[in-house]
Length: 236
Length: 116
Image (tube, rainbow over all chains, first blue to last red; front, side, top):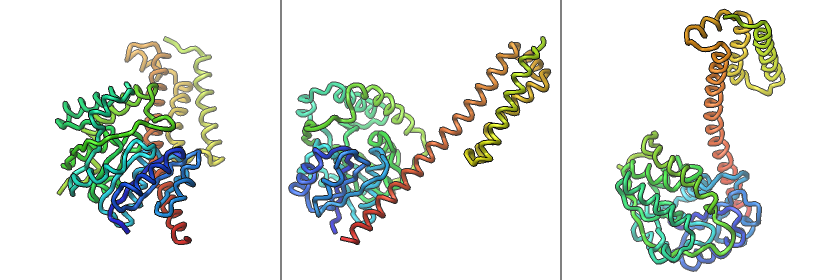
């Protein structure tokens, strides 16, 4: 049993999941690898099961990204893990940076792996770029924090935050809302710059058409999360 | 102001049909009694307007609107309340379904790992 858990939510990532798991096995510190197959139509689950060291959780319905991450957290908590990393199943995140995230995490800190400035400039995805700028601006104005890439799905957190996530994790656009709720509960959020890969196979769920709806919905979730009853227990 | 007989008949029949449909659904176990209580007031209001059109005329004089506008506003308001309640129910059911699916996935995994 390892104290570090790497949670990889994956939906229809059969083309990428093997590469992601091998990357974690090779480049991450010893850890429990938990792949959450969120009711994929392709053989994401069977491909992940080929690796003996990997725990694969298959959901019988589509949980959404929030529900999938929460499922991974629940499993890792039951195994007694104390530190948790969440990375995407599409190969954008590099496991070699997990140790950088780990170096910054402590009992009251959520570490967000943010896209490095060089990668960000090189990225041709205008929608993604403008979205990141927009949310960074929102955080700076309303939360008075500088979080470079608040929509990043590459995060590291301690057991205390994991217990909060097990209790409540937003279903649809979890990153922004959970960050605001954590800040309100007195936790700290720090950024660690990492290099990220462009997607090799398939399409990101944040496409050009989808991005406008995404931004409106997440903005709404952002503002609401300042007023809603905070399900996260305050940092002692 | 008078309400045409045809309008009264329409209100009355709508109320009767709606009540009959609700009772039918309850009888077939298609709607839980709890939720039928959302719709029955709507049927009741229709019946009331059909049987006692004076109520409607008094309200319309009070708010200076034509009676059919009052009916429309009443129906829209009731529909909105019902839909809002149902949306809240859907959200909480979605949460329940999510928890259930997570529990199933966790126990399946436990079963698989104990077998291997």
